[in-house]
Every structure is written in structure tokens, then in C-alpha cells.
Image (cartoon, rainbow, N blue to C red; front, side):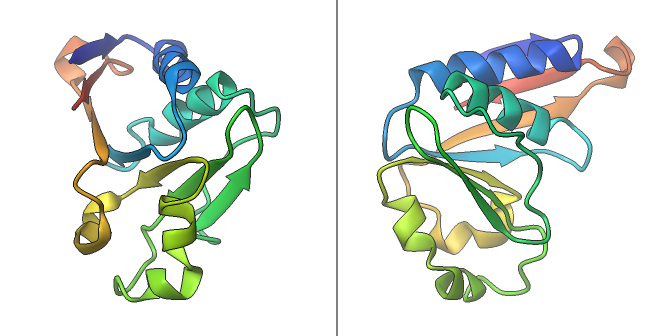
Length: 138
């Protein structure tokens, strides 16, 4: 499915709707360039899960946990040098836990992404306006 977002609020609301429908064990891979709105999407998703904490990118900690209707495990693997570093973090406990996992920069750890993971691609289209995003949910 393809969605069009004309501003960050619409990106947030799409994330929120998907968060409301999320089920335990889901793994969502967020793909898109730097600054495209992956964290805004995740903030909306968290709200849809009932997370009350402020959600920001876990760039320096790799993973952050939030409590809501289901736990949310938010990964930003941009700084991972090698996929084996994910073992040190104990990624399997998150991926196969009782919550929902969102991964920013999943292409850096493709070897460990389960086949059943959902992919969401967020792209800018400057010809449509500075804030326009094409969001493809696979």
C-alpha cells in the first residue's frame, strides 16, 4: 500500500494508525534517507500503542524500550559496525519478545531480519513540496 503524506503531522498520524493495529511479535523495518521522517513515524506509532514517554531516535544507545499497550523496542542501527554487534545487544530477546520492534536503517543488518518482517519505505519527493513523503507499506 502506498500513502502520501503532505506534512509531518500526516506521517505521525499514519504511524499512529499502524500502532493502534499492531500485534505482539511484529517487526517493522523503516527504510529511508536521513531526515525523511522515520522518527516522526515512530513517534506516531508509539502513540498508537499508548506509549506516553517522549520517543526520540536511539542513535547512540542502539535500542530504547517503551511501555504501552505492547512494549515498543525502537532500534536505530545506523552506528552498528558489524551485524555481530547485534548479538551483544541481545537482539533476539527483542525481535522475538512480547512487544513490537521498529528498526531504523535495517539494511545494515539484513542478515538477521526475519522474513516475516514488514517493510515501510519513506521517500521524499521534492517535486511535490518540501514536506511531501511517499510511504510504502509492504
